[in-house]
Image 1: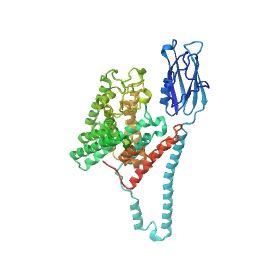
Image 2: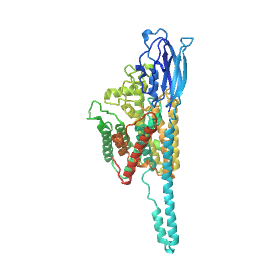
Image 3: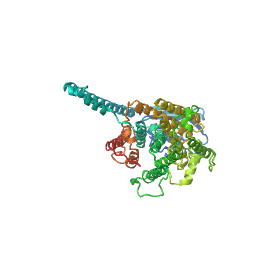
Image 4: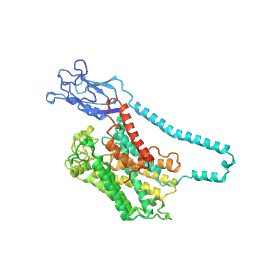
Length: 579
């Protein structure tokens, strides 16, 4: 893990940091609260700061920012010192700050006292082991099939003419036995769902302590930020395919409304009563209960998408496609849905950028706290955060990802109301993938080309909105806000990943989807189960040492593997939890 920290320090010649030498012996590491250290004698102007590269870069950065205690009433001459330095994990670094001839230009000297360790070695070892296991899972069945084939050939060749290949009835039976039943499910869709869910479980188990398996503090994108929108995308694709199938079976709109309402209520109640509550929390109390949540958002998104499909999606695909609209027929045919989504997105844009928020600039998208030079400390999330705090009060998420780095004090829920609008947009993009599969059924080349075109359009749009930067774009990529640029960027990735899996599994048949297909076909059970039991043994345990990634990574992989194994056993028993 590499930390790149850019900080501004107020260097006071008459006030010294606790020196790391025999006289004072103070050490500032990732677990110390440097800001609480006492001021030392003022007769020194040379001081040393010692930095230990721990597992949490945001803690190191925050402590660096507060590392110089200053008694303002005793200071007459102030100067500023900035530096940019890379602090790698496990290394011990010293920063010597001393006064130069120019009192306003102090000297900063960096030295490495202990070399850092290779933070990525546990990840490389784990990747190699997983690759070896995957190779064995592929090679072992192949060898087994070759042995069975050899035995069959030997039996056919050595048992006389009645077992020969020309023996009519036997040959016919063999051919009949080799015919595989026609697939009714897209293996790529179940595998995509299972892959996203497996990654979600691993992330929730800590992701091995690596920063890219943690959610971004505010703007930006990490691996952990990919999971939720992938799941929403899959919901949209599944809704389009499932409702089309029920339409063919003659299911009426009243039955569809009853089914989608029941499923929505169950999902919301699961999230409200179980996912946000654990037996270790003690008696259920409204004072700390979180109203928004992951399953609540998924349930409401499913409801709106299903309602759209019920009202506008049951249209017969014309056998003869007019030449004028042929390239965009799958879009034009469902124009009422597109109009509805355009209205929703317009509402999101107007509220986000035009709604006045008390004591905050209009259109503010920042994290608040000490961000933006501390000018808007209580404006976390702008209009989105203001609406949620007005609606839910304290019954929302209290520990947002921005809290530790930006020292925010306001609660902010990443599954809030305003972000749900763009969750629906994300699901609608997934519905478009399902409509492409339906509309161009049997024309695999056209399906893949449409997926690629959509990925390119969405990718270019995301690049324009974000200006290919983290913070300087028109609308930054932000998972907490579910910003428009974030949604269309995730739509691009989703089309590419689903298209790749569709080609490999449903067209070529090179991969059957193991092991991800097992949790993908029992997603509700795995998600609810790992949320309720994931922090109990044998899925997890108390980490003895946080100084390296070895144990943290092993625990995350172990817990994830257990849930994949449970899903496999349920698959073998043909048990699938459905709502």
